[in-house]
Length: 325
Image (cartoon, rainbow, N blue to C red; front, side, top):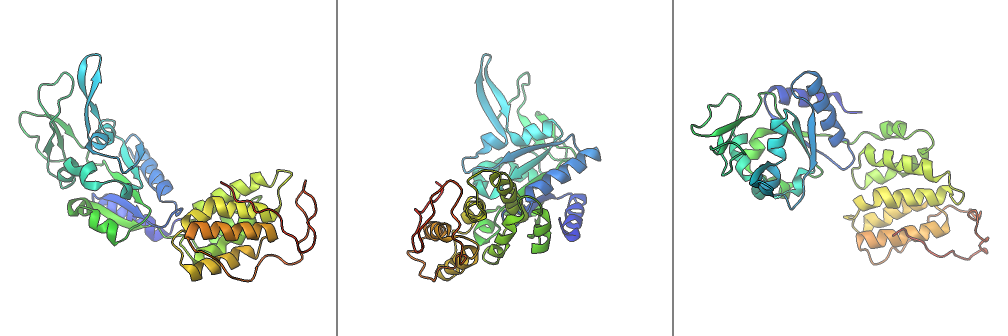
């Protein structure tokens, strides 16, 4: 699924001593690739496994480095994810790193990632010296309780977006220690093969990728949903396709302009019955903020078969609009 060039870039960057920042569109498999690489590192005895975390805007150095917490014995130092991973010889996999406030969350770590030891204002239980985080091959500061980073230890991080705003928020010290590697979306024929089977109905939604780059993971999840949903007695291909689009793809399409929104409606509605096309129009308007989509209905012609369990709709009539909430 991953291009050979991407895999070669990851291996080369790791061998060069860099941490990895995987960038790309949603659903391209960045997190899965990070897990797979960490598993291979474990098999090569470079680590004991990985610690997986997801960054949040609330992250501070307490979540990454650690801090004092109350205990029956009083205040004791509790390590953050960075020190926890190092202490257990596990690689650190950080998903959606761009969600964090970098200065607030990684301040003390910038020095470490620049291959310089840093002394923390904390002491571990049973130790009288302050903790020092020491990069591999670097002398420990005197009078400290050193935590040395293993030579093969790495951070595997992912970013859903890599734009100028994110770039400006990244510290140069942080960027210098990471190799940025793009994970491109798989081509349509690959995604089509991945969703083949009971949920292959979602392959009809592949043209949506012309509006926004979407990775295969979104379509794989939608295909699993579709396969399960089609076993229900009220399911029709039109309704289930609408639900799959609404639940898995539409949230990624909120930045479309009016022209794109109208084209999107035409692409998807061509596979839907009348009531589902009406629901689609409303959903796209709500998501994109477009006040109206004035276009000729592109729904399937001649599709008058009622859904199981519902009364037949008179010719020219409409069914109540239904949008999942």
